[in-house]
Image 1 (cartoon, rainbow, N blue to C red):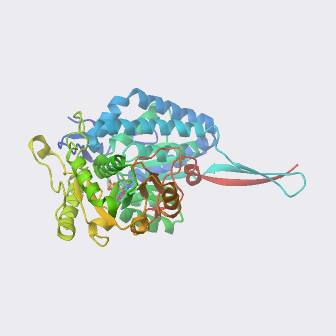
Image 2: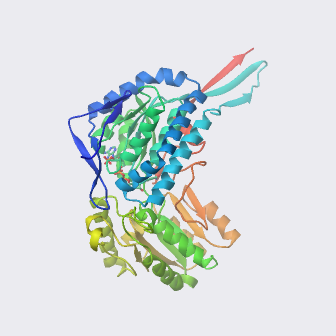
Length: 480
Ligand code: NAP
């Protein structure tokens, strides 16, 4: 019998009438059963969070930080098990899962330390003997909705700043991978976080998301996921004038110039396009390559891609796991067919892998299309899978124009040895996250994270910037 994971409301593990399965996309085995939460559970969780708010927000921020330090320590002790859970439920390779759990631990510690700073503002008054300053105060009860592709780091980077600022929270994880988020909540519970400060309700996004945005006590919603869902949430949240933060899709370019370190550029593009099965929001899905090296670059990327090993993320030496579920795999295969019609036969990959044990999972070959025109669908729409579209650019100006020619603006990368081009790119690329001579994916937690244009809405996540969303200012003028 697979283990049953309950929801967590008001400090209690809460059962329910129905359950759903969290399955391993590599082989279909059940990674865990989850209690299927209801709209009523979300309302109860929001009420519990409201009851916990006065005491939690009145506690000193360093004391709140101590709970985060403890939870980080608990995750650290359970590091191997928590990482394996992630590979089992999401399919990413075990080294990738370990990297993500390590990041979650670091995020908890980073924001625990923020409890000893929580910077306010102090400014000199124009008036005699007036002292003026601005304090941070929490927003209140926050609703957090997270996707499956970083099932631990994203819940961590929302929960930790929310809690350190003195808010209480209701977390709704993705149904395809709820266990990694559950492990963080379990760690916070074991760390002794007071009842109601953190609540967890798993279950269908439509029903629970609607309930969360409409729950009376909720004052803010932070969402990461698709544009379609995010835009719908924004419309609903605006009716209640909720504070809202959206991190959504992308169509991220990597520009490769003729003066780049060629082997490093090939490696960076292949890494950013295919690792984590191309299911990173910051993954490269378009490589825009300068004419002079175009044919050589395509050949080198194809040669390197063919060497990638696809399989069960627990097997040593595997580079790429499965798509997260059947629906995602079908989406990817559908885009590959569209690519075939519009851009021609892929230079490598192009199908599902079904040999031997792979038949039980949702494995797709890493696929490279070349000579993809700007108007082709696979150059415009987010696929969220192991598919790379390579495009030819006349020169740097043409490449930059193509890179910016998208409604999205999450990440953008350049591979070049020219300092001048780097700065042109830094100032003119239309994205919230830029990388230079690195893969477009792979961010740290100490600086702001988030996109621009259609990819994002609201204040940035992570680093000190995260405090802006999860706190408000109270300004004080004091005559002495
Ligand atoms: P999704 O389908 O939008 O789901 C995200 C979350 O929203 C899940 O918890 C989902 O619950 C919930 N949800 C679904 N329908 C909802 C509704 N009507 N109201 C409220 N919540 C609802 O996205 P996904 O497939 O999990 O993730 C992939 C997408 O996320 C990609 O577009 C990717 O680019 C984006 N992403 C962006 C970032 C970033 O930082 N910009 C990071 C990671 C991922 P269920 O799972 O129960 O459906």
